Image (cartoon, rainbow over all chains, first blue to last red):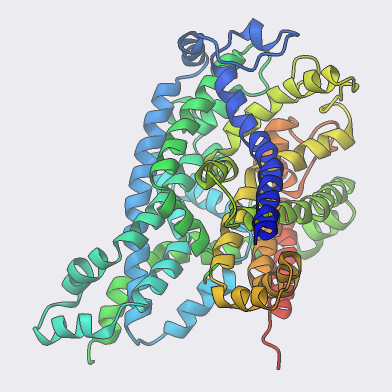
Length: 278
Length: 286
């Protein structure tokens, strides 16, 4: 018995001895992001090794704000991500509800098109989307351009279809017998029951919109209409730019998401893992 | 049951409209644009124009080669690492599990721009912390940005850091859905943990692993931001140019929509081949 428990202890020590350095390596870039954001530029570009935060964050932030209107860009990013999340959750859960709960003409075709095209690279639709939004609709550099095209994402449809189809029928049948309208059943019975799934979906969609780079880079390239990642991206590679400022911006983009991640880890993980249970 | 069609479509139509306009139609449209000469007004149908240029374009083959090279090295390394992370995070012997999970999963929430900026600073030639650390243990510093091999390695390191934890989350969820009693029976029969991993975990996890592979391959195939921002527009000298970057350059710098669509459809072709391979790999045995 004691040899077995000492073997267990040995295995446990080996596990931690391996995993701890790996975890530290993984945290290192995030840690350095924070450290850089608090260092003056001449400190970042100096020969010494600095691994601890300094006190220069506010100066760096002011430099960033001088290089680009980052606060304005954050405002756009927040508004766009919130609006996108609300709309996408609403649209995809309605569609998921229809696919999970009704038999109707054309259902097989709709499901086949969604599933059949889900692994196509986003790059394929980039050029037609751009031509349509910028040239045909003349909507470049507007909020609509940032919010509406990405709403095509079908992840939520599949996720919510799965969630609604796992709910027992009698729940809804009881309401139907009472003569409750279908949209009221959806809004007041089904959606409240799906709250954990909606939370997971909303977090994933919010994050996707908050970090989205390529589409906003292409469609909203005017300084006053840029999202925060795009505004920050324009500074990377410039010769006369405050790198401490860029790092302050990176921290402002990242740390709030890390806090949300820690607080809502369960929903986060559920949302990501959901991709695998199609 | 009489109004089911009408009811269903009332719920479905708002989403379907967006889906049709911004996804289904562009897929078709992109295909058609790839057969048009788009630098003349009006565009004209010229089936061989872009595709003919594509198969003779050294820039295309350079981007294709780089993309495939990154795929072939980075994806297997990352998935193996994610598998190791998932197995170890799943171990009942692990203390302070939450801290380890945070360390590996945190990159999932970090945006491409933010982490590209950090990696650029960390790998800077003279002032980057990585070269300083290499120097401090007596190793020569590496010029990550001026030589092709280190630049490619840097891109692979960055992408692996960003996405390994993401795959570990999916793999971990897959592992936790394997029934506990399979392992209990194996332990009673004195099957070692290592053997349990190879004979129970891996086979049962195969569909999830294949799913992660497909997801990662399709993601890496479109790699854009990292070579755009970290190695500065695919530098040095096109050494980290990818298909994603070529598409951006052709489509949105040269405004050559037809040629860019042909590049996009090359990616689509690869994605379709990989998806079919997935279906074949995870098919139900007869």
